[in-house]
Length: 177
Image 1 (tube, helix red, strand yellow):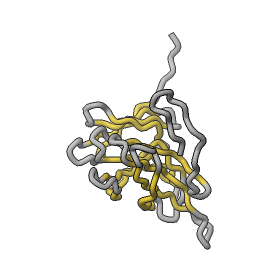
Image 2: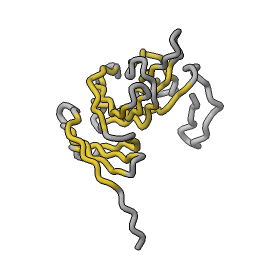
Image 3: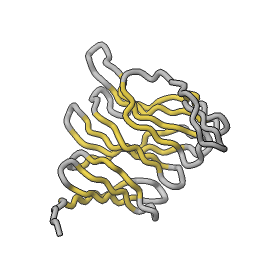
């Protein structure tokens, strides 16, 4: 953690939280009360890795973080998790995933308790290729992502439930003008 002087903007020396071997991505809640991080944990006795979303409460005065818990997402399949995003109302978090075993591509959906900041796993959708750079439209009706397969993807989203349904890929065609 670094603290920031609210007048000058100068950052203090960092205070590290030991989280283990690999942090992928972090996200702060819209109310600034929580920080979430995707994190690869392992290996276990069988050599398996599991990705978790670690949950921290945040002191809004000092910026200090307190560990709240974590949610395993990938079972023993490992993979790369990146680009967590949160809805404008702070109720839903989505995480893009490239699962190692068996090979698959997913976008995970978690709900967030607005009072405590605690996360609950909801579900995931499978996508046709690795999706990253997730973004939620301002009206909350869509999630967009790009893919390593040169596609731009639209995922329909219910603003009231946060559930992602349909997924449509469009292949990029580069055409210099």
